[in-house]
Every structure is written in structure tokens, then in C-alpha cells.
Image 1: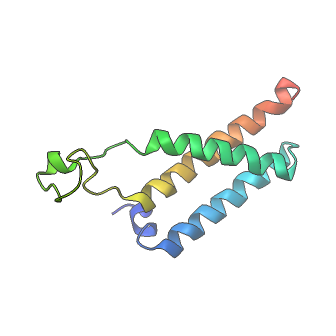
Image 2: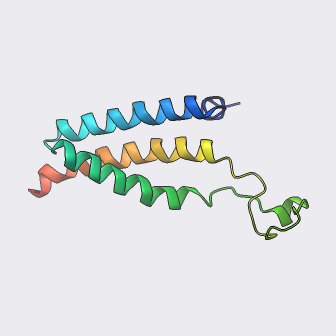
Length: 109
């Protein structure tokens, strides 16, 4: 088992990881001379954008697994692992946010 899988076992551990990484990202934004509100807003946009990029990665549908639940679409995910995806999204978003925040002073923004 990897660390993300272990951390995603509960709502509280997932939330704690996300809050810590969010705080690291916002602190990085502040270090690059972004305002607190600007850091939070930019991180929010980056996180939601990347969430939709991370969601379809390695998804197996119910039809592929062969266990379609009655009343659901066969293309619905068999096991979405949303807590793990939230952690991965936060990890990737933190890295992208720091890179974008570092670019702002270079661009004169």
C-alpha cells in the first residue's frame, strides 16, 4: 500500500492532509508576494481545474468489472476512490500553484 492509500482511509485523515497541503501552498503564494486572498483564490481555481483532470485517471467502469449495480449506468465507476483522488489532486495542485505563483513576479503581475 502506498502512503496516499493509507491516508485516504478516513474522511478526517484526508481532510488533514488537504488542509496541510493547502496551508503550504498559500504560504508559498505569500512568499512570492501574492496577497492572502489572491493566493486562496488562485489555489481554488487550480484545485478545481485539476480535480477534473485527475478524476478520470485509472477509472474502471462497472461494465469493465462485470458488476453493474441495478439502476445505475454501466459506465459508472466501480470504485471511485474519491478520498485518494482528493489527496492526489491536492498534491498536484500544490505543485502547480507554487510554479504559477513563482511565475507571477517574473511576468510582472
